[in-house]
Image (cartoon, rainbow, N blue to C red):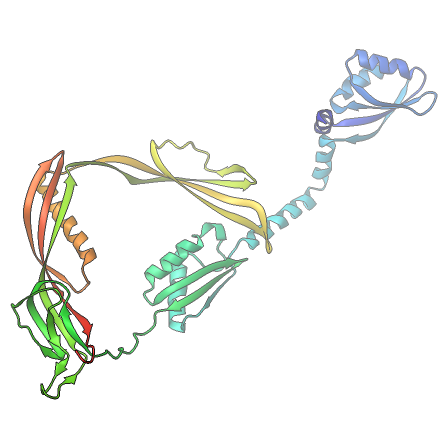
Length: 395
């Protein structure tokens, strides 16, 4: 097998030798280190055999004074194949150009279909897609992935609840779910309003029901704030108490902030390497420079190439190397205290309803230990403390 490949790459010539003493010619060729094989005698004075193309000069010198006639029947192998290809270079170039054009066209975006959206929402989606470069004529592997497109559309267009992104062939399909208008208020059952936690009433608004507390009153968890029983005590009417009772509530928090912190950040430098992946092998095609970043993060993306409607076992792959650098952040004690207060507020806001408001902050305890500033914080919050409690008939 190895000899066959060697013969193909170097080229071989089939020779016909005629005349007396052809055996002596073969012996002389062997002595001159001309490799001969596939020897076949087809007559009393005629022989066929094969030699390497590179030994052609030595062959002519060996048979020059032998008195034999020789002729070259055919040549085979790489050099002869290459010569034939050169003769037909126009056809070959046209064939490869055709394949390249088909490959490019098969990996382009030709259509964008959007379903489930109103005309005004569809217009917004197409404008946003244009900003991202997702439009007919763009190469698919130069665009963001379906997940990234979906995320950007959802974040940038407030009218969308959800959008599905799917690439089929050369067409992007978008399935849109728009935000629905608020439903009509649900009819509330008969109920009271009670306190969900202890607080001091700050202000209140009662739309329906009988208020049982006043501003500045201290209330406990579960205490009745607004009664759903109104009217004549002898013939009361039961309604669904409705309103808001805003109370001053209290929270405690403990926060630690290190004075010295080391962490990694991206410095903005990045390099992108491009590959063609066939099977398990990646062949670099662009940016062969060595990555010199000391610290970096590597992100890989793979896009299969298509030929018409078929997906080829060839993948266009990119590797993005983003440089990182080690940063040391140092706080003074006053700076650490301010940072701890800010962190404490942010953590508290995650627990509170959106309409709540932090109105007071007090440091209960502060200490510096093991390179950290530790704070114990107390917060005053104004929030709606009223929650519904159903009225059971017969109570």
